[in-house]
Image (cartoon, rainbow, N blue to C red; front, side, top):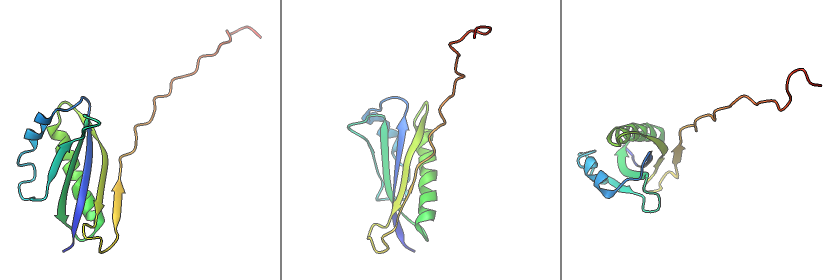
Length: 120
C-alpha cells in the first residue's frame, strides 16, 4: 500500500510554549516518522507531520483530519484546524491533496438608518 506524508496545522486560542509538546508524547505511538512542533513565528500555531499507509491521498487526508481532531483535544481550552494536506513522499504519483475548513461566516449586524422616521 502506498505511503503518504500528512501535514496538519492547528491554531490554539493562546500562544503555546514548548511544554505543550509533552502532551504529544505517545500521540501516535505506532508512527516513527511523526514530528510535532510549535511555529517559532506564530506561537499559537502547532504543526504535526507523519507518514501513513493509505490506498489514495483522499484516505490519507481523512486520517489527517482525524489527527487534527485528536490534536485539538490535547490543546485546551480550544483551537481550530487551519490546514490538512497529504502528499506522496516519494513524488511517484505527483499527488498533493489539500483541505482547509471553511472560515466562519461574518456576523452581519443590521444597518442603522441615519434618517429618523417621519422626516422626508
